[in-house]
Length: 251
Image (cartoon, rainbow, N blue to C red; front, side, top):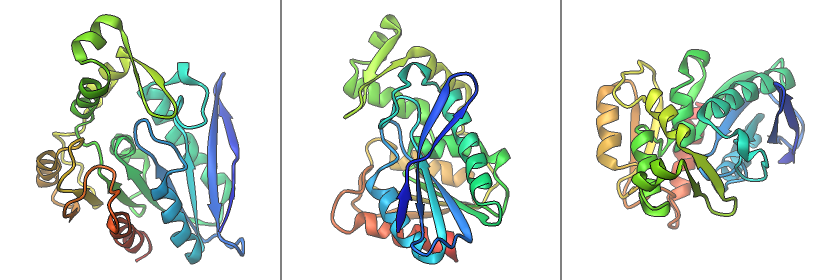
């Protein structure tokens, strides 16, 4: 497996950082876009493991950082609109990079799943979608995160921003929460076949919410990993995710 770090500029100010994984022999017949979660980064263990397996099957994997995530320094540009634009631009970048290859799939984690569900109108029906612990109710998920790590929603509303994240600490404006509310996907039937993988001990995206979402979306294939939480960190859990995801994306 090879990888490079291209950049892509669009609009007046946005410059995206991307990571592109390709097969050793350089032959790319398909490509998959990988979206990380909120406060995550493009160089996640899950994306790395996915790329190791897919590049063995003539499939490239393209990941990217949202504004203010990972090694991205454009914190001031962070918004839901910017993240959605980044996704669309990444799709265009992949199409131009691999004009003769098939857009095979999307692997989207948590907030990345929310972005994917908000972008279904631009994703052709033959693109296979894997949602890993997707934040199907992202406004509530975000409020839960703020409650645990940012002093609560009342403080957030009063101060107008909250600092969240791990290695990269990001000041998130309250307008981001309003954007989430305006783009909520939880109560919809998206009428799309997808694979949704989640753990039954997830305390970020609650299992009962995921189950209710799948109940409204009967075309979704739901795989539950017993004992797993939101991060799938216990031995063997991420491997179970990959087994299911790779099969879905290559079958």
